[in-house]
Amino acid sequence: MKKSLLILSLAAALAAVAMNVETTPSASARGAARGQDAQNATKNPDQASDRDAVAEKYSTSLKKIFDLEAQFAPLHPVLAKVYPVAIVENKTFYIFDPVPAEREYRLAQASPDTFSMPVGIRAAMPLAFWDNRMACVVTGEVFGQPDGYVFIFHEFVHCAQWACCEQRLKDGLSVYREAMKNKAFMWELQYPFPYSSPAFTKTYSELFKAWGGNDAAAAGSQRAILKKALSPAQWEYLTWQEWKEGLARYLENRMRDAIGLPENKGGENPPFNRVTFYRGGDKLIRFLERRRPGIVNDLEKLYRAIDAAAGF
Image (cartoon, rainbow, N blue to C red):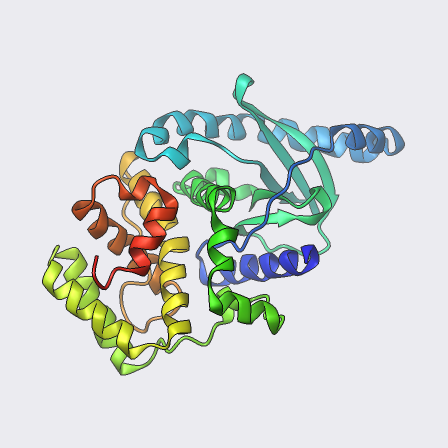
């Protein structure tokens, strides 16, 4: 199962780069590897030198994450915690673990990149070679981009979703159970949703208008039409993505606003695809939060509200 989750996460990461979006099918476990890393350093001084150089290179950039955590934390409870960051460089995963008491990251482990991760990777994923712990996986140029840190915190949202309730919620989805039964481990990326269906395109476009205009009557009627038009599995997939990626996009846009960056509206206009649910979830969550203040702070209740959004 661990191998399957890693394969799924890798595929998600590669797709995210290709589409210039962020995603994470994820798993988590506890563990650290400083002792083993020290042993490896003794055995291979050259690799130890490389680790030291990478640690020094990114020390200041990683510390900035803690500065932004203080700025972002008031926006939502999940933004008040940072997670491990794995930087892919020199065909190696350099995994940095946060040390909150010292407000810095420390290099915990270096492992070969056997997957040839592409430059531009932005993903949250379990690392099988690190006791399957969750980490935000990036390449180094992220720290020099205007919105690079926002994308890192976007991935931290996915880490928080996993730590909270993601697996329990997925276990309740027939679309997930069927995918696991059929070993369709990339279901979150490859589910055959009818994005190009005229009925879906029309209805979801109307929902964008209704959510943006805070039109509860139109939102309710269009959501009911949409649910009726979809199969139960399709509805599960839609609402899962609206929660999973929609929450990350919603908080991404709040962070962007906090530091003066433009809003990410990607996915709002046809032709629709999976990224449409990032924006759809974002706008639906804003709509729900206006009607039920505080709902966004409880991740599991938020999912239930999205799933039942036909009646709000």
